[in-house]
Amino acid sequence: MALRKILTQEEPTLHKVCRSVTKFDDKLAELLDDMVETLYDSNGVGLAAPQVGILRRVVVIDTGDEVLELVNPEILETHGEQDGMEGCLSIPGEYWMVKRPERVRAQAQDREGNWYEIEAEGLIARCVCHELDHLDGHLYTEIAYRKVTDEELAALSDVEDDE
Ligand code: NI
Image (tube, rainbow, N blue to C red; front, side, top):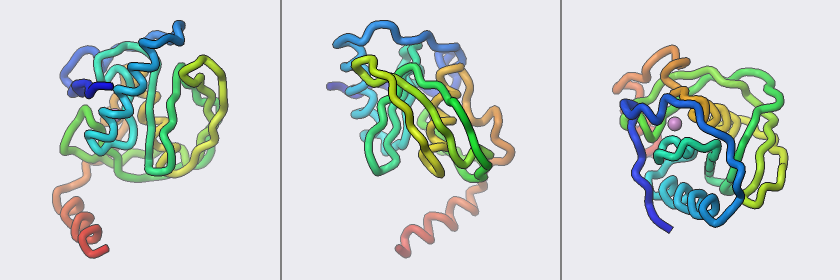
């Protein structure tokens, strides 16, 4: 396993549409392993392959419960709405407010190519939407409606320090 370099928003790779994965081979397994390692190393909750320079439809998510590996993912259904703060490893140091569905049902393949479905809500649903947007070359700031201010961030970190 190896850490991969995370590209930042000025890189053209982040604005392109990714191709589907067709080979479920060792190279895909290595990519997934590296993406998970890179995600943990950067303290993120989700990472999409284009963020490490690979234009393939591959996403990893870990919000603290378990690692999800999504290959060729598609959202099947969404419900409700949530409004909250979001960040992106490709846009370091910034947080913006984004509205997302509260729940999503999605399908994806695992590293062996088996299709499965997930139902996600809250933070995981937000991550699924954010990471899948990356696969189509979209960054969350395109749909964000307001930047979170330094004062708001400072207030949040005060709260966290108290816990
Ligand atoms: Ni992102």
